[in-house]
Amino acid sequence: MKNNYKLMIGCWLASASTVLIAQPETGQDTLMVQRAGNQVILQSPAFFFQLDISDGLHAAQWENRLSHRILQLGHGPEVEFDLGLPGQPVTTPRFKVTKAPGEGSTPGGEACFELVSENLKVTVDVCYRWDDKQPVLHKYVTIRNDSATTWNRLLDVRLGTYVTDAKEYHDADWPVRVTKSPWMNSEWDMWTTDPAGHERGYPAYPENQFFVSLAHPSGFALLERQQLQLLQPPGVILEPTKSFTCMEAVYGVAPADGARAAFCEYLRSRMRRVLRGHARPYAILDT
Image (tube, rainbow, N blue to C red; front, side, top):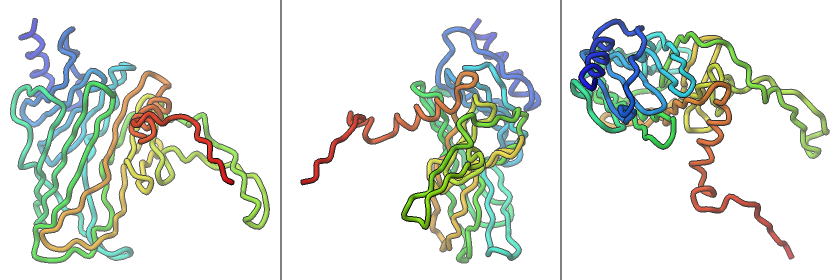
């Protein structure tokens, strides 16, 4: 049976990127990196994340094993960026993968890739990490200027651009009522538009069973109908041999209609007050 499972994995990896992911047998629910040819899958008990390295680093599909939903990612690039000044022509490097996990199955929750530009001297390191405690995939990206010229500027970094098959979802907690403070001219009420998937610092909730975000309040997780994009606009000057570390990208799965609750639980697990056992009300006495 174990050999049959390996054969199933090899068959779908060797075929087109849109085939359904083979289900492992009982007992195979472990952290693992599977590679056959140009297809790589990152496996956990909660998800499969399939990558294609045949022409750069692209995402093919993402399976939520908690809701049994496979989200197509449209062979979207995992990292792109623009060099130049706002309002002027920019250069967008193209990449090929020069380092990747080896063929076959590798136990563990880490997969790292090295990308080299075909038209500029630049190296990009992309590392994915995950564990069996949380249904979350973390992506870390570092961009290094290998040229002899200062970049003016590293303008926009896209840490994933996907055309999905997700059905439109509107976060039920929005719009919300916002009251303007009395010291700001006057007090008045307003209803905001839906910030989830649109505004800076908020996550996106595709179908309310996936959540995607950048782990920084100034990052964008943009969800417009079926297009999902993780955007960081650093706008920095990068000198030769220097590196720029991008925001951490977070990909999470949840049971059906549970993405927002799962994202909040994930945030609480990283809060200092929770980690130190201080998640309780505080009283401040002023005398």
